Image (cartoon, rainbow, N blue to C red; front, top):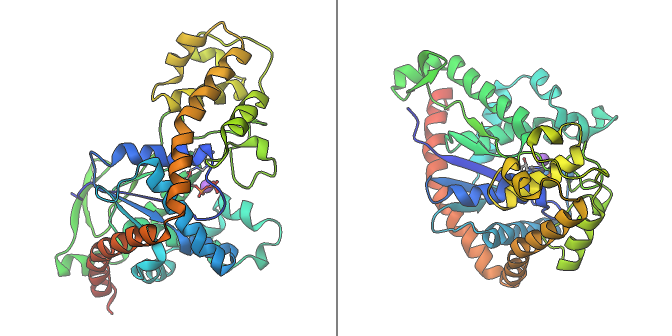
Length: 350
Ligand code: ADP
Ligand code: NA
């Protein structure tokens, strides 16, 4: 079977928000003590929106600073940016020839981002999930901790791995480089693992503070809808105070959150910040008013986020240190990446 290995990443576009922190970063940090982890700043994905070149570099450094400030330790995990390791692009090309156009056309994120004028969207935006599959499979990662919005892309990653393993099964067998793995109750052999998403817990889908039916996102035009990692204490407190809720008191049991998406979201955020679950939060706050709960939530969010913000600000002023971390991480990532690509070139016939 495949060695357990974690891979995840985020794009260096715009500010990180509480959804990114709770749905991704905070969970990445928790994993690095027990598992082999690789965390990437996916700057090649950011090219799909053609950012200003100087801004792309500074955003890459800023996101790296956020990773480190949140607690990623470059001694425990590999931390690097994607464009440093050329094998990402090389494997993505192979996967472009494995994946089908129809698979890409079905991706809801593509439909959202391309908007109405799909003919005019970049080919890179359409092929994005193929590059994402390459990111993950270049390290033959077995698990990817992400938010719920990435579920469909992870399914596609599995489809690509499976089709590659099938299309080249004879070649993989004759080269003797197949790895046995369980698929359902069958044991099959393949070169790429069928990577599992890790999507669970109260933070898998943090919603907008203004509308409990929309996910918290950097592309939401209302800044009141999200808490940014760089927001100061006053702003965080104000946004939580203004967060939409209904007039009812806090229920004592999880069932009482049904049909109350805004209430459910705030309770979930509290649970994720305190590493508990919603039931535990409701045991403490059931029967109370949201105004009282929001004051505690604001205090908690500020206490947890402001040390990260401060450390981020400090690190951003030390680009030489950041670049050193990325260089070192890139070198370590390249060793694994080249090992995989060496085999992939053999498999496909280069
Ligand atoms: P965005 O969705 O804001 O454009 P990214 O696509 O760069 O951010 O996502 C980075 C990581 O943060 C991914 O693992 C994604 O699943 C997670 N994430 C983004 N938004 C949320 C959210 N609202 N709730 C939970 N996780 C989220
Ligand atoms: Na996303």
